[in-house]
Image (cartoon, rainbow, N blue to C red; front, top):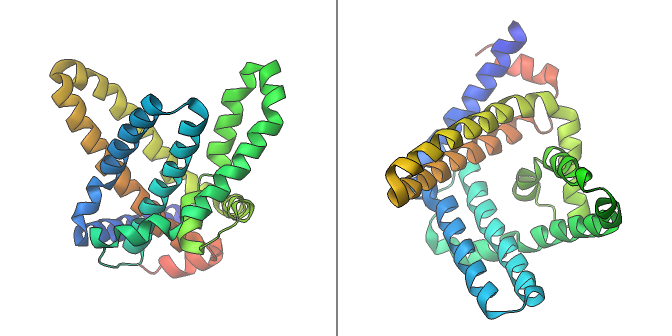
Length: 238
């Protein structure tokens, strides 16, 4: 029971820190929604103007830029800094090449395994789930450890999860379950309220996702580089 109390305190501290950081920068609650809208608009534009190959290449670059922007502001929140849109230009390139490297490594892996997936389509979903689990801490490694090489980032993410998989996936699993439940009710809200309901749900979902991502940042900071024994000593005294 002592272990449960200690980790409940650790999670509560991470959530409290996340809410305090967001309260200092409330505009960031709109970031996930804003980046998603920009992403969809760019995808539609490039899809209509360019061929699939060049359009896909540019969308890939835009994806890396969007993740760079988001990771930059997440890093600022976790560092308890005041962040603003005047830093947007800096954020575009802050982690751009880190994400390019990550997606390149994943592309090579997919390319090597594509004959296997072509022979057995049933392997695609399990492989996607394995990637989601094994690389779950990648955003936090990018903006907290400052890794540049794609392979180095993915290796560090996997190494962190090897050391902290229970402590990391207990709260993250609860958040995923909550998102699944909310999305089920969301379908009913969209059906009842139409486009207005869909927009409101997307905005609320983006804000909730942002809270979760900032929480993850503080949790990663608390778990990384510390042992279970150190955490027990640090948090059991309150």
